[in-house]
Length: 222
Image (cartoon, rainbow, N blue to C red):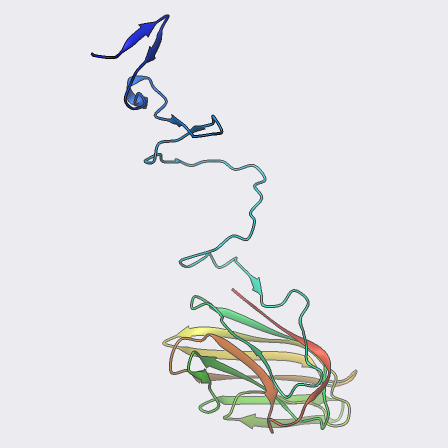
């Protein structure tokens, strides 16, 4: 062919790289670096990666159920706030864990965990019950305004987890098990159907005006 020279087994003058099927590399030399790059149509088949390092990866689609994301690496300080919001949560979430560490409120109001969509926090339609137990008996409370967590008046230092799980059709269920003092436990559960896809969680109190005075809150999801 015109402009093709074969010298000592080396072919020069090709207008494009020799295809792999013809014994070539299918690659071209990148400008500046001299490195060989793969053709634009290259396909990796079952590659093995040894200890790769990912810097700020972006996950798209629906990750596997083992992917767990913490909203805050060290939790958010609740003190001085009447509510704490975790927003911009992805649509593929199936399980949410709300963690309480040394949480207390100024007036010992019961805690509410509320879910929401891009349109705002849902404040009605919940079926929720919480019971605290000590050595002498139990006390039950309920709420339609959020997932309620019964505190212990006078000494509410809350430590534990509330788990919220997706059941389909924008409906969620919850259960919790926390300590509210050195001798009292609070347990309970409930359900709510949202008007759209969940994207936020709010932790507040029944009155909405009782401020947290200690502790940290966090949310993780998968």
